[in-house]
Length: 189
Ligand SMILES: [Zn+2]
Image (cartoon, rainbow, N blue to C red; front, side):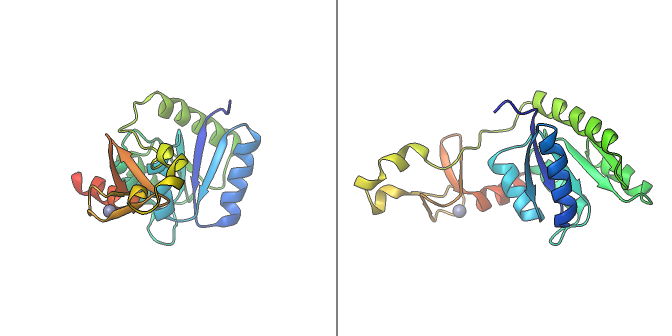
């Protein structure tokens, strides 16, 4: 676990994302990949990476929108945007919208590594907003003796049951579905 830092690569081009993952894994980073905006938000909410590399074309959202959603979820996240070479205006807009930096395609690997390295240092130093944990790790151990009622809790947001094996979020002692929690986070802003 002595990785240089944790990275989330977000991009719908599987080959490009795979190349980024390979490169940064070889350099000693822990790398996760999300192929769409929903997965990216889920992964970030469950375990905030030290930095995010965000490609701008995604199936369910565009990069600019996802950038603002990530920032709304946790403004301490450092996001490096990958940007088409002909897209100076977009690059400026990303920085204004809170991106840590933006890197042009075609990729200059040394430059990308330097930028991501700085993003990780900054991301690690920033205080993280709120504690997000996997749901109920303790009760899971003893759940054999208490089937049914013992395995559920009420979602703080929608008041439906949260089953023990659902992906869920514990924040300040109360439980919510990850999706409900994300929605509430977005509305709070
Ligand atoms: Zn809920």
